[in-house]
Length: 486
Ligand code: GLN
Image (tube, rainbow, N blue to C red; front, side, top):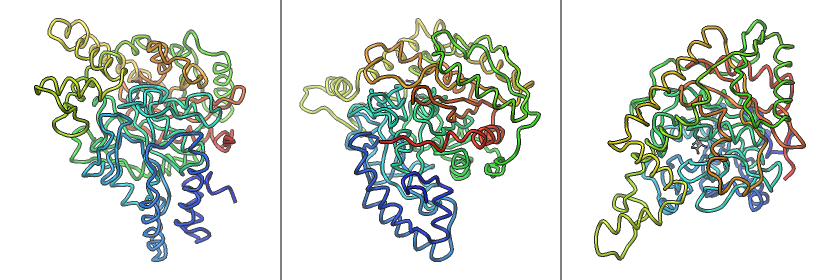
């Protein structure tokens, strides 16, 4: 048997269902694993040991009664941006240090209904702003493949936890790459679903027109299982779409013969590490060998503007979303000032970290009367162009293949004081959120022991196409079976 800590969801399910292991046993061994490796990895903001064991006991009861769904009794980890009733939810910010939500996010509710066991809440960049978890107000998470390096971000805690065997799976959120980039950096699978596929109710908002919640898992099958549980229209999120939710696991185990794949040249950016380019060449050759017809030199000409568009739109929306942290309603509140204004100012001065303040200032500037047309409106127009180019590409191709990031995971501290260098690590993932289309990152090899991710992009609501290609590639290569030695 695989070490319990490295079990996938479907492997754990098989053992639970056949009663070779109980959920309590599995949960205990996960908690032990967390105790032994998390002091090094630092993936968790909060470990919910007692709650997990209670939920596991309940799951075992259900299983004894013959009720064992794919997630019943399976322990998972939730990014600390997702509201969990009665469990501290910090967004890795001082602003929410003591915030205990009175309700569950829809995705949490759905996972609980499916019998998931909550192991804890994962560290992240504060308010999901960042690419390395170094913007967490508490501590940086380390990459399990090399503890001197970052795990990516902003869902770095979720990715590291899954890679290090501190949970069977995790959920992350992705506004510009925060699921896919850390998935790539930690050699796990991470899907950003189509905008509107998954309810954002209870996801603490960063940039509402870009944010999506998605699975971070040990393989593609698991991602399909989690998507089955969390997808669908929710009347509490008006942007969630009433589109039929297929059984995503049905798209697995199909071959990819004759599928048309495009390789967009703009994603092979200047500054890309040669090892990443080489791994991509090998991966593309593998896809061809599996029967796909691959066309290189596809062009999505507006791609180079995506970074600028993102850094206008995301901060603009963030500046509006984060206005609620005023020290009055909930969260941190600076005490002992003479006036209300001063209290509000000090609350925001001490409650937010530097990156969050930078984004609020950028967004407030871009939305101000004199600059709105020049920046925000212009960015929205380019956003439409970017989306149109994807639509056009998908008339010809079933999917587009790109690297997830231009580099392997970098050293902690390397880009800490250079926000622009940090922003560049998401060049391949940002355009996907701007267009609202779905994309996955799956393991595609290593360079000197450091993970490389491949991104597969499809048209809106074509997650099934993504799963089909990703699963075929994964089965042919076996990269998903590699585990780091922590
Ligand atoms: N790294 C990007 C940012 O800092 C994307 C973050 C995200 O997807 N939440 O905004």
